[in-house]
Length: 407
Ligand code: CA
Image 1 (cartoon, rainbow, N blue to C red):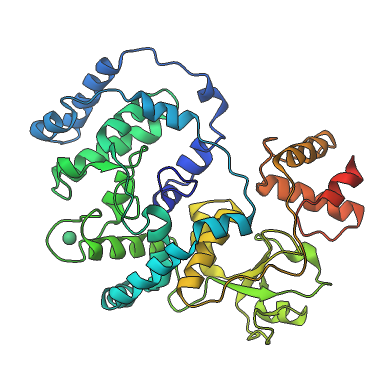
Image 2 (cartoon, rainbow, N blue to C red):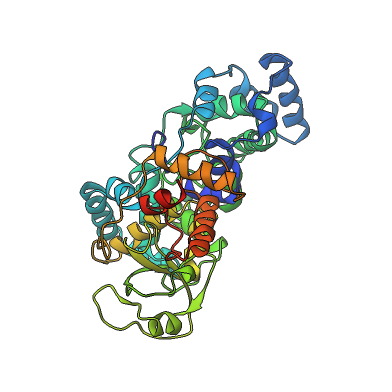
């Protein structure tokens, strides 16, 4: 997935802000125009000494960093990541195409015993792991072809975020030093992610599991290691075994829409009282499980209840469209039917209209974050506040009707 917008979900969530917040368009202001003062070679000499002091052997340092050079392609990638502005339905249909869905199902079937063993050990269902596996690398088919050491050395040297990538480079050396990976296996995505579910070296060191018992944690070649390690990260983020994560629902036309917010939780029984039903129209099992109502395209679009386990997706990424798509993919692999289009026609604003709306909201004193034409959490919150002020259904989703009222 190194060319797509969904990248390295788990590892990036572990780093919290690294790629999604840091690289994807919203880098720290002071870094945007920064300059490197010394040469790459001089910097690398310093790093080699630090690695030695950190206990990495001379031979590992020599073989790993002996001939490493600066890679301008990596910096170019890092600085030119596009912003993301597709609607949920569009994005979901692209990411969860027939091919990927079929592949996912086939793998779940083929490796049923292994998935079962992993679930028994870590409590994470196969469908959830397989969805990440499919989105990250198309089930190991596209793990990237960049030299991990070269990429990480380049990013650690580059003035933008050396504090993030220097430890990653050190941990990449540790993976070699302790024998998990061979030098020839240090190949991955442009930002240094490795393996079938794209771990950055620090998370690799921290979370990878030798599940096939051969003494090495190989997230490129060993499927048992890949699946168990991925489950281990998911569990680390708080996954509760046996609990749902996301479920499509049907919403009535007269819901208190302002309650539909990923930050607001109500017991399922309360949602049921408000008329929320299962996707098939039957009653929800009205228990006390806290859930948020997620409307990625507003009250006329698809609707989901997000349960506590959905939190692991939010660890990964703050974009409602990304997270809902990944979680929805897992529900499809677990047997859910295709999502309905919702109550009516949810027509997303164009990028230009979104920018215009953001500017208007900004001028009126609402914090929309960056005026970038992207529907992020800040813009959703500002839209909701404005909808409440105007007495419109406050579903946080910007429409042409709202834009016209403000113009
Ligand atoms: Ca192994």
